[in-house]
Image (cartoon, rainbow, N blue to C red; front, side, top):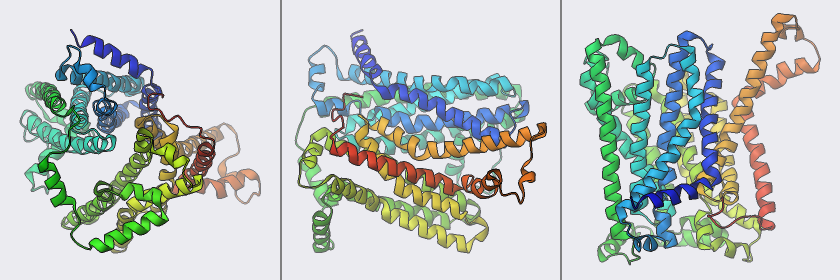
Length: 554
């Protein structure tokens, strides 16, 4: 096959990148964190093996949908930016071969991420309580998710040449295709599982119920597979497994269809051509300001004068769309939530979901903040401009905070207001303090790694690791240490109660420092400490020009 040398070339190129190996470490680390948190609240016994397996399966499932689209979103668009697509077409290769090779290589990389987490997943298998059908369903559902996630990344990379647009389009397509996947999965397994397997209560929207049904089945949420097994006859059980096999074949067909569509896009758009008259007309009609034009011009002029680095992020309609698009998302989600008659029960879930989603987007934006400047060479021009290093760093940080400030302000105000209406559902002050601290610290950490790492994925993973995983990991270590200390008291060591009223250092630790360490304030404190360290390193490295500006070096 003519495509085999291309696959070999891509595999060799990806094997030289450091973040290819970092992904495997991330997969194993995420699975270990899930096991550690589970062991804190549940004993690792035979009866809970199935529940731990479900938690690990959900971690792998969501990791596929988050990481895989971002991994392959730039595989084709990067070739277009670097001008190497034309060189590939000088060979006997066609567009379908190029897209297939790219998709195959990134699929292998995603599988390596899953294989790294496999040793941790075997823990609940050794504990027991996991049937062979559960393992088979986990394998089939994760494979289906891999096919759909690869499809979203390949399509996004074939539609756009810009790195930022390809990443945003990949995220959008992942959400859309993920919703379609859940709907198809719900429709596919509803009849084989039997109408009596699960009867929803209080659900009137058939579309939402079908998607929820598909989500439970794809992730084994709340022990779904075990409950379905117990309510089905052997014939229904066989039909249920066959229905999942049909979903596997359907996912493979979706991936093949996406490869064909991406190949057609590549044949159409690989040449550098000016936008068509229709595209120019649509952009003029849809994105040209018509209201308060003088105010907008004055506002952008003042931003250019006071913060030219932040102005770079909002000089175009697409940059401003990120700011006000998230503002609109917040208003829409909470408006839909208020239409629900049982809003008090879902209030806490909605608030935390939107807060984590916003922090994720902030991390993505911060990790790729200087990506375009590095590719075009603008960063070198900024470093030799009359602006100081402090002005460059401060201007970009103010731009990142200002880009998401309206959405975060709406989230915080609604959170506080709804907490007064539903006091029972009001979140603890430490939780809101954590999200406020993360809003301030994550852009700082992401900005440092956007210049320190040679590619976006590595920068994003480093931001999440340093900004979220390590603070929570330190708190987890202290919790495990406390459990160990309490357990050794049974062997004759002085107990915790023995330090009451004692002025020793141990008593100070247990009654002064320990409540702070176990609270969300400790996580925020660690985040700010890391942010201070990274901004000092960033300032020092930018002054000494201690950065690799080529994306080819990992």
